[in-house]
Image (cartoon, rainbow, N blue to C red):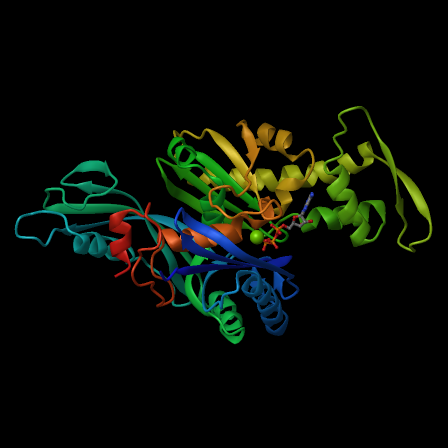
Length: 405
Ligand SMILES: Nc1ncnc2c1ncn2[C@@H]1O[C@H](COP(=O)(O)OP(=O)(O)OP(=O)(O)O)[C@@H](O)[C@H]1O
Ligand SMILES: [Mg+2]
């Protein structure tokens, strides 16, 4: 039996990660992963083509070797300050004589929702159906087969700057790969870390990477707001390096070990090297806290502000899930609980088999989510690339499968 392969490629600000999965007897299974440092990206956008290509090649080669498979088509993660999102609504008359909603009608109405006022330098990455309305009956998840003459859809539309997208695709092509589709990164991270019940109740997903923090808000099962801010965990390393006058490498170690400097059993003292690398000085967790906490608060408040400005006031949200490498910061969760006034947990990829302990880490949520997202077909066409078929995963929703054809 031929196994279908699905690959994800997360080109991050700090690392590129390639994941190879195949459809096994129990659904999707990860069979190869590869990681390489990423030196050609800043805040989600390509600043050095050659470095980025090298990084993609290195990560992909490792994943191929581990999987024993050749990687051709990849689902590519996209993020950056150029991403915008909006909600739209469209309506069509059903085309069947018997006034029954067909797959074709669903496709047509989603396409109609993509007609938005878009500047020439932007393109649609996703048009995600939130819910359908059939002859005035709202909140329909799958309208196919229902009786009705008027089909409406509410979609969440995500657009990106064509130049930024083209540069990412250029690197992918020049690394010898084909982009099967583009996925806005927090949607991928959500696919790997959120349970469907959480999306139903209402949840905020924050993916704190090196250079960006990506936001996705879900309610009633679907994404209703997405955004990205150009600040991630690297800024904390910079702050610590400047504040303690120590190297970036040592600041990174301090950050990982002491985090927000919230010591459970009283203040602690540790020593760091000065910038000359020879002298050492004593630092207290209180000093570290004074550097790290204001920046963490600022970042989280920026996220909260974006959400508050853009989602309906009466929206019910049950919790915050933080993922990405930045979520590993010791002491982060209580600060986030304070800012959002919601219970907070760290999102670790769990929703796929074949995961090793090494991969069950928040910094791999996007890469793992890319294969889930690609396999589940929860994606609209992007950049003229459209996946055929849609038979990979059995839990796929039928009407989604049809959207691909
Ligand atoms: N234990 C830890 N404590 C605090 N921060 C950490 C820890 N481990 C990793 N980080 C931080 O996580 C960030 C990298 O996260 P991640 O790998 O998710 O980013 P990326 O995907 O490469 O970047 P981006 O998503 O912004 O493009 C870095 O800032 C790193 O310092
Ligand atoms: Mg990332």
